Length: 86
Image 1 (cartoon, rainbow, N blue to C red):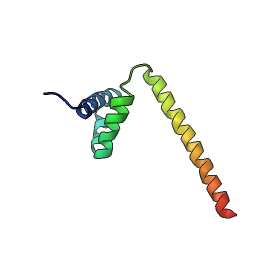
Image 2 (cartoon, rainbow, N blue to C red):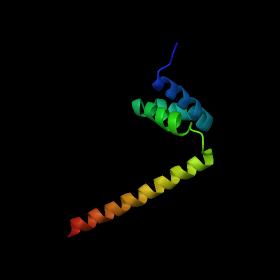
Image 3 (cartoon, one colour):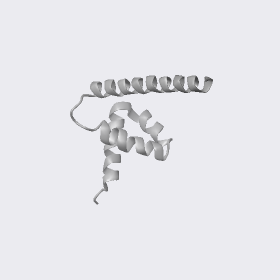
Image 4 (cartoon, helix red, strand yellow):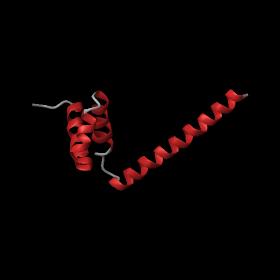
């Protein structure tokens, strides 16, 4: 039986998730329904399964991006508050 691209990505994602988080990770994403499936297929099946960067480097990049997005959202929030105060 040939698997579709989505099924292959999902299978690869579940394997990577199990490698990184064990059974707890799978329980968490299963409880999230379609959002959990998307996270497994894209986040773990596409991003974390790629070669080229070590897990440490991927984690560093993920936290760096999260930090930048947090700062940008705060700056946008402050700007919005300032404009509303005028």
